[in-house]
Image (cartoon, rainbow, N blue to C red; front, side):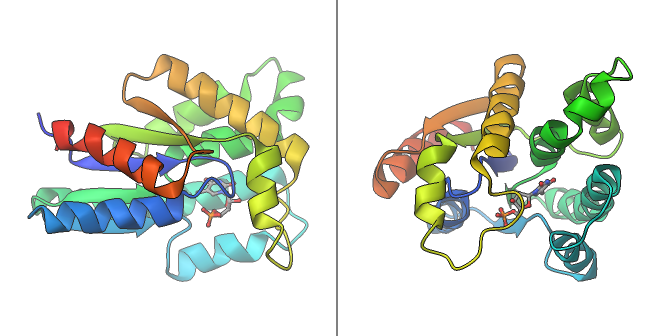
Amino acid sequence: MPAKFITFEGVDGCGKSTISKEVCQALIDMGHEVEWTMEPSENWLGDQVRRSYSEEISPFTEAFLFLADRATHTDRIRKHLADGKIVISDRYSDSTIAYQGALLSDELIKQGIDSVDWLWELNNRIIIKPDVTFLLDIAPEISLERLNTREELSKFERQGYLEKVRANYLRIASREDRYVIIDATQAKQTVLNEVLLILKEKV
Ligand code: TMP
């Protein structure tokens, strides 16, 4: 079965937005019909998610905001796939498992629950499983240096936190065959070439 639903994941500053857009264009140039999409979404649901970045909210509220956005995003993805298109998403369910998993781990472990497993289970009720997921892997120490040129970092962009997020991604990758780990410290063109080489075999 050719790959139809492709996701890009990684910590802040890993370069996935640029790479996923260029991959989308490359697949279009190869003659495929492709939809590029992202989370948080570019609509009112995504706006509420983005608004939460600067609010003091419960980490559970934050997780459910991402999930609410994802449920509707998934409906759009389902429609594109039914139309025979390839869908490329810049972030999807693994972002919640990695990021909110890191945020909720201390709280949930007190209840004897593994936050990654719990969010995994919640997401599984909502999502379409991607055919391929590219993890653009990079140490947060390096990715944050890239972001430091921007004026203000968001609450997600702290090194200690992103190290937990990265560890969660690597944990998900170790149990999911769909994962391809790419060294995102390489030059952008090298990362792009590696992704396209793999995708040419899969789409
Ligand atoms: P972006 O930097 O790719 O635009 O993503 C926005 C931020 O939101 C980024 O710091 C990662 C975070 N995020 C989560 O914490 N959980 C999620 O489920 C998603 C989709 C993003």
